[in-house]
Amino acid sequence: MRIFQVGSLACILVLVGVLPALSQGPASPPPSQSGAIDAVPPQQGAAAYAPAPASFNDVMDRVVQREHLFVAQMRHLRPLVETYLQDLKTDRSGNDSVFKDNYFLGRLDMSDGPEDTSFVGQPGFGRRMVNRLTSVYSMHFLPLGFAQMVVLDTDFQKRYYKFSFVRREFLGEIRCFVVDVEPRADAGVGRFMGRIWVEDQDYNVVRFNGTYYPHPKTSYYLHFDSWRLNMRPGIWLPAYIYSEESDMKYHVSKALHFRAQTRLWGYDLKSLNKNSEFTQILVDSPQADASVKDQTDVAADATPVVAERMWEKQAEENAVERLQRIGLLAPVGEVDKVLQTVVNNLLVTNNIDLQSDVHCRVLLTSPLESFTIGHTIVVSRGLLDVLPDEASLAMVMAHELSHIVLGHKFDTKLAFNDRMFFPDENSFQRLDFRHRSSEEEAADTKAVELLKNSPYKDKLGSAGLFLTALHERAPDLPNLIRPHLGNGLADGKSIRMSALLTSAPQIQPQRIDQIAALPLGGRIKLDPWSDQVELSKAKPVTLTSVREKMPFEITPFFPYLTRLSVPGNEKVALTAPAPK
Image (cartoon, rainbow, N blue to C red):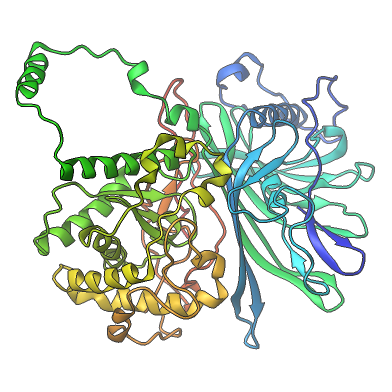
């Protein structure tokens, strides 16, 4: 990514460039570097017909070809791309703390050069300007700049680079060639400089770490670490990008200091939303026919109460289906069952019978929010990531369940299907599941009552500790705290379920065993191809210093890479944090 200085007033991030068409010309002259390498395992797919490379130069020829194929593949895909950024400052003791954040969510379209479509309505999303400059030498970030870090180079050719073989290395289960990449003197500006990891079967780049170089006099490039996952047999696509700067000078007295996470998902939304009735042949049994006849014998029109419930259910299903279709809501999966168990514990121990099922779903975005859609409780991936324990999760679920128990109104206008006809990027403007402040207060009171009669009654101190930490950090993390579809957990003045704060222990930052909240990304794993989520199976890590507590903070990515080797296998490889 590049930072561009406009006159003498400010620096902003700008586009790296437009992706070129797939090269069809003859192979470029190889670099002077060459040498024999070990035998490479048999390859899969189309690459299986090519002879095994005999030298390092041959390997790099394959890498260039695969990178061109990657660009061609990305032109047919439109994944969601989310970037969350935290600006840092260093105190006198040398410790970093977050004092500001930014958030971007959109869809990446590379069919005609990189473009972004914003879901959250920032001015300038996908353009060269983000916001009107508000202060001298202020720094603004262009989300498309982070999204473009999925591309190694706008025109990756051997004639532009010097390649140096470093070693072989495993990333998870994948054996890789590690190669240092340096632009040649006459390669022009904006070439990649750093290190790449190439899997040793089809020669796809699975990771690249570095920056773009050289830069013009008035612009700069950020450093990044970009990861791809094997989402289909032989196909590696971008999933994670981590970016960080600690001392980049963009003015005599100004330095850039930040961390950012970019995630991509929603690659296979078309298959995810197929109607199975058109792809399966169902044959009714004689017993089924008899059952239908038995029901029709006693059938009757719905009573007014039942009709009202059915109408609300129709609105609920329309909204849930729409959110899943555009990639904001995960399909039904294992995490839902975990949330459902907590809800059932609250219902059973409080002797509540709602006469209809309560469902739980996961919103795939990072901002911390939860809300209800009729009888469906939705919790964001980011919120599930940072909750420290089950009692804190129960606190979130109890608040949303209380809205359902108290019968708070759900706007049934969504029962009309034409309400769902709007562009994806307008979702946050057209779908609103907020409750009135009076309903929020009533839900808080009821939730405390539910919790005190639940299995979590003796562990509410940790839930109060989480709320205290959230309240303290809210002014510095407005974009992480700000909800997009429901009510917020906290703002600068108030906090949800404040009654729990009285029983919470005092936050002691220097106590290594007191965990008020977790870092982002440590609990939920997201499959970028299918949008399925599951709980991370990584073992807990013993902390060695208070700095490793990192509540609500961004950390680097180190996914455990796996390979899909069976053609036609519909299961997509997931990742887990690498052991520390």
